[in-house]
Image 1 (spheres, one colour):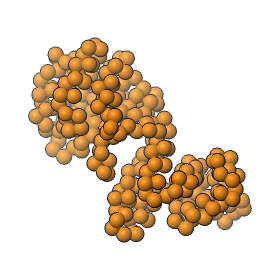
Image 2 (tube, one colour; image 1 turned 90 degrees about the vertical axis):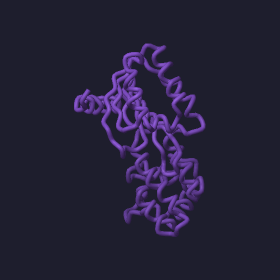
Image 3 (cartoon, one colour; image 1 turned 90 degrees about the horizontal axis):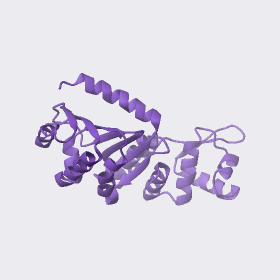
Image 4 (cartoon, one colour; image 1 turned 180 degrees about the vertical axis):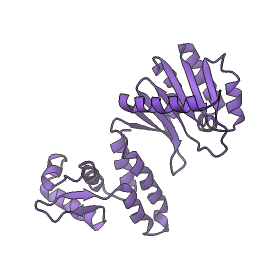
Length: 250
């Protein structure tokens, strides 16, 4: 699911109408340059429809109007919106947490896609067949086992070996699974370095080609993966991972 669609769907789940969600996102994306003409040009709504939605978003406190003419509309950040929902009653607490999650997601590139639990196993096992050169694995191996199970991970490794692709892994946990996998490095075309950590969050990332995959659990305890295909982001991550690798002991 493309990032803006994910945000839109979540906003609707939080109680906005489809029109309110779409217009809020357009205003959020405009970086403070959204007037009625901009919104009409970048949406399917008439001026009458736009002003109706603007009034509704104003009533909800989700946008701010400038005092200039023509009026410029700006959207409050998703984190501020989360605070607004959190103060309206206990039943909105989970909504507030979801808004906080969205606020960080809104900063990632639009090319980022979000995959959810219902298709993650096939997605995961397909990764080795997408690798052209080499793969970095960073994070908690306990998370890999928790999210997919040990048998799926064995199949993943088997697929990677079949493709003849090597891996470097930096693992942050004290899991018995991590030490077991490190003991098989030579057989499994991998070099592993472990940073013992009892409190590392259940998340992990892969880097290969120009692709970054971040696996994590959201506020609702659902497993998701962010897939970003961007050479600049991949290069920045590679530098970080290389520095991390060099700082760990073998």
